[in-house]
Every structure is written in C-alpha cells, then in structure tokens.
Amino acid sequence: MNKWTLFISALVLTASASAETVVKTMTGYATDAKTGKLLYLEEHERTVEDGKTTSQIIRYRVPEGDVFAQKVLDFRDNPRRPLFTLEDTLRNYSEGLRETESGLEVFSAAPGDLKSDTLKKNQFVADAGFDRVIENDWSTLVTGKPVKFDFLVPAQTRTVKFRVKKTGELEHEGRDAVEFTMEPASGLLRWLVDPIVVLYDVEERTLMKYDGMSNLRNEQMKNYDVDISFPPAERKTVNGGLTAD
Image 1 (cartoon, rainbow, N blue to C red):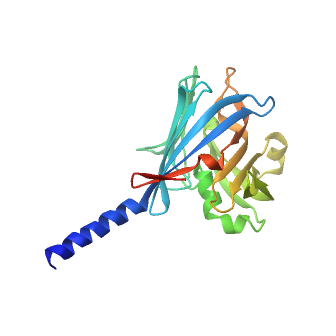
Image 2: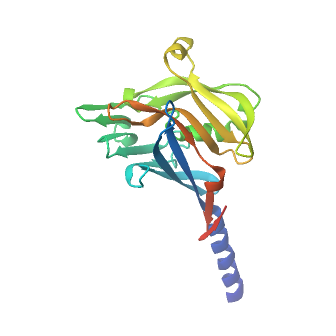
Image 3: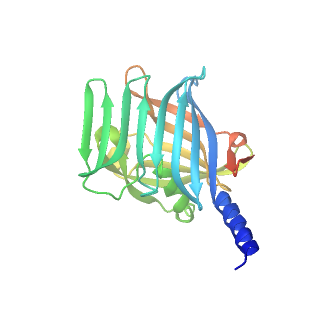
C-alpha cells in the first residue's frame, strides 16, 4: 500500500468517525400541571455513537436562567438501565444509580433523609432508559400491545412493575405523534398512582410532551406535577462541528 492510499484511507476513517458520533439537543419547558406557571427549563444534550445513545447531560434552569440542578447519565453498560446522578442544589437533594463493589446501588438523599440499597437484580429500566424502551419496542407498542418492565424508583430504593401502552394518535405542533401511557402494572397501584402520559414524534421517535410527576421537588420536598413541552423547532443535531436542525 503506497503513501497516497494510506493518506486517503486515513481521511475516510476520520470522516467516518466524525459522522458516527453526534450530539442531539432539545429544550423542555416545565409548567405546573394545575396553574400553568412556568417552573423550570430542561436542556438535554445526548451523545449518540454508531446510532446508540452513550451518555446524556440534562441541565435544569429556573425561568430567570440560572442552573439549579443537573443530571448525568451513562448508557454504555445498559441502554435501558443507565447509571445516573441527579444533583438539585436548590433543594439540596440528590438521587441516582451507581456501580459499587457490591453491585448496583440506588440512592436518594434529602436533608435529614438518606436512603440507599444494593439491588439484587440488574435487569430493569431506570430514568431516561424509558426513552430506549419506546425507541427499541416501537414496532410492538404502536400495534397497541403493552410492554411491561421493572422501573427503578430511587425515592423508594426499589423497582416497581410498570407497563407502557399506546393510547392515541394525534398531530402535535404540526407533526404526527403517538401518545403512550406509563402506569403501574398492578391494578391496585393504578388506583393509587397517577399515570405518566407522553407524546413521541412518529418520524424521529423523539419525546415531544411529558405530563406527570417530575423527579424535581418543590419547597415542601414533594415532586412537582408537571406538563413539559419539547418544541420540535428547538431540536438540533451537532455533527462534526456543524449544527443542523
């Protein structure tokens, strides 16, 4: 192989590498479900390598602009069960899932209330791993067939059996969307726990709207009940230093 062949091969490999890694961004506007008051903004940065999500950072801002919380997620070990840490400096609260010598540890820490436990199972869905459920089980879900899974609840340091199912089709902000409802698999728990309703873009399979309990807390340390909108016009993909809508 001569030097020109090596040079061209290097260029091809470099171009391929840059094309295989992209950063997808979107912004969410969280309003109080009862009053409609804007509570906070979510700024998502998701790194995708070879078509698979590997990491994500979510910054939470008060309406005036300052960051008050941040979540860091690592999907490399298991896309549905990312390791993650949420730090809310406004409420002095944190929660997450981490790898320890003893296994997977779930924790939540509020002023005067620290909980942690080592989980016996490792096959479950955690936090934004729910997006991967929608993404990977799309063909099953759109037929109307529910998908069940164990979902991690950090505040309870355990998993709970949930199900997600298609509950509608509609147009949202000029785009075709599918509505899914996530709720406890147990009929008894469904009487006690409000469902989470989400809208996903049909073409991009990207979250457009979220209605339900937030993982952030109010002054009384109760989880916000929110409606979060993710305007399609604010989605961007950064690839090789260039930004494309």
